[in-house]
Amino acid sequence: MTARLTVVGCSGSYPGPDSPASCYLLEAEHAGRTTRILLDLGNGALGQLHHYVDPLTIDAVFLSHLHADHCLDLCGYYVMRKYHPTGAQPRIPVWGPSDTAGRMARAYDLPVDPGMSEEFDFRTHGEPVEVGPFLVETVPVAHPVEAYALKVTVGGRTLVYSGDTAACPALTELATGADVLLCEASFRDADDNPPDLHLTGSECGSTATTAGVGRLVLTHVPPWHDAQVALAEARTTWQGPLDLATAGMVIDL
Image (cartoon, rainbow, N blue to C red):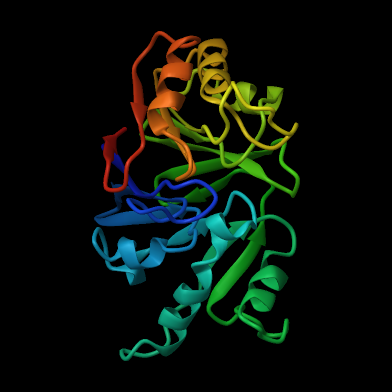
C-alpha cells in the first residue's frame, strides 16, 4: 500500500509569507476509495487545502494541541460543512486534547452546546485509533498546554509528527524506528530559549539519531527565523536523510 503525505502548511507560530500554519494531509487507498486524514488544521490552512483535495472528502482530523496555529481553521471548516450549498455535511470525527469541543465553540463565539458538535464528532486522544488503513497513536509531550505527538502507521510504514514540544523522552520513544520524523524546529541553539516549549534544529537531530529514524523532516520554523539555520543545526547531530518541510511538499511513505 502506498500512502502519501502532503504538507499543506508548515509555518511556525503563525502563517508566513510562503506557507500557512501547521496542516498535514495523509492519503491512502483502502477498500476501493481514498482515505484522507489531517494532522492539525492551523490558521490559513483550509484555503490552501483546496489546492490538493476537496476539503469535504476528509475523513478525520487529528489535532496535536489547541494553539491557534494548529487548530483555528477548524472554524472555517465548521462553516464550510454546515452551510455548504450542497447541504449540511455528515459529521466527521475530530480527535484532540480534552475540551477541544469547548475551545472551538469559544473560538467561534458559539454556545458550548451544541457548539460545533453537529458538524464534528469530538473525541479525546487516548487509545490508538483506526481510520481506514491508518493507525494513529498519540503520546503527551512537553508544551505549556496539553499537547501530543502523533504516530501514524499505514501499510507497514510509520510517520511520527512531533506537534509542538520541547525535547522529551516521550517523543524519542514514539519515534523509535519510524520511517519519517516530521519534527518542529522553532528555536535556535544560539538563543536563550524558554524551557519546555519548542525544539532547536540540533535537538531535532539528536532525537532522530537516538530514535533511529529513516528520514528527518524539519517543520514549524517561524517566519522570523532563517530555516537554513535549523537545517545546519540539525546536521550537527543527525547524519541521515534531512529535509525542510515546504508548503506543497509531497512525501511518499
